[in-house]
Length: 215
Length: 79
Image (tube, rainbow over all chains, first blue to last red; front, top):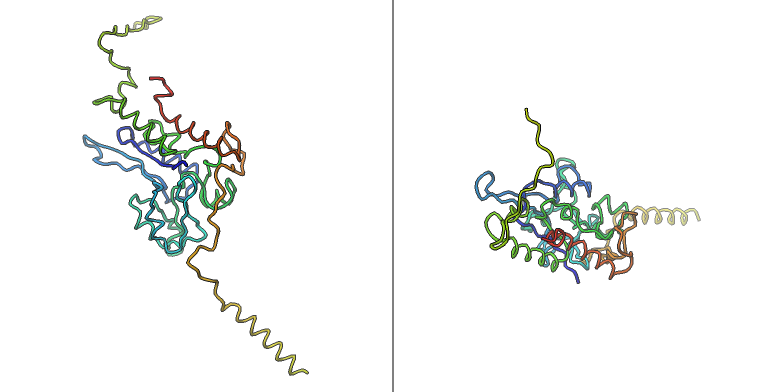
């Protein structure tokens, strides 16, 4: 059985916030709620690293353990979802979550917290798959459409990948083994061409088809 | 006769008035069914990706595996 997981490669994330934008757009997430966000460490100094963070759909989720109204459930694919009709917005899950995934809209009276909102791995909620009611409360159900989460599928550097944990781990393993060290870690060779291997002729520069106009 | 009617009317009004005092049953289990329909049954909208058949679990799993592997640029570029 598939276990849906995200992984974010800190060597590749360029802090473009494309994943955040894709999530907001795909799920029509309300103002003030960020199901996904990019966290940057050592910002602006050598060694800066960014990572995209959302609900990690824990196998042993602490939010599920602490919820006083038992509104969480796990799908066959290991996606942790919740029922907004049952949620009372107490906020216990946000204290328990090590990733800060649970979010609360603050649009209620006197700043009262609303129902909890979090990443659904683009898998919707308890309502009928792909229904309007599901979209209103939880956003798009891309899994039921045969797609993976929008944030991972559109990540430009493929820093964020999502899907079956085994496949995701295989991709990451291959990447770590092949990308080497030094500048290759972040894809310099992929972008600008590999250095010639010993014993192979160096690539010849391509000839211009026309001379540039002289000024 | 009138007294009996008044008594019945009063009891009816009383029972109706006490309806608001009732409480829903409180149990340790959620009141709703968490048995969501599996994702492979498909979505009730026209946005399904081509390449799989809604209701066919195996084709759905293959579809997701294919899309997950498409995130590996080494297989996409052949480098």
